[in-house]
Length: 231
Image 1 (cartoon, rainbow, N blue to C red):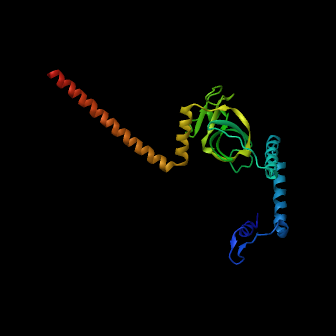
Image 2 (cartoon, rainbow, N blue to C red):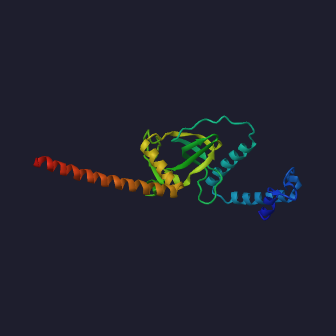
Image 3 (tube, one colour):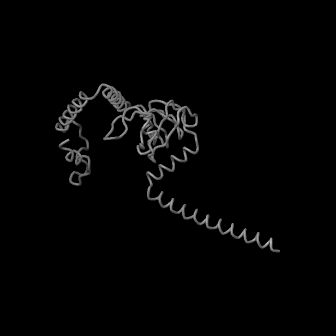
């Protein structure tokens, strides 16, 4: 949009106006914005025409759901999702390599109408790789979400989403404590790298002290045993 900065300036407080330039105005008061909207729509239409059929279908389904969400004024009654729940999510609206369209995801945190999720993929290459941010879920395991295919949690693509994006529950729930703890540890390293590294260094230092003390105790025990034998 060629007038992006101009439009953004209208959304900021202007001390000369005593408010924002957009206050108490409608789109008809800024006809150029309407023209720019149609220009963007034409570019979007051209992009849509050049997509493959499968991508076009997926894109349109996501766009239609997005529009319906904007039209709905009634407050939704959100259901609750426990940590580890597998849900099917509409990730419509991506930039670059972000996950898009419909994909299963694991719920990591719930807060009101929002969820923090990580997408799942059944891509066999992802399942076989050694990426430290990928957590493997073997198929047909009840405590691993009971997925029909070997799946991988992509923790490098964590997303905070509205519950409106959830299409349905998908499979079961990851309840395996070892996997859940591993997810927490990997997320801690990924998001809070500085603190995580300090925590790891501190832990390793304490473990070294413990090993040293255990060695001292073992040596003392051996000395005591020898003294007892000599008596």
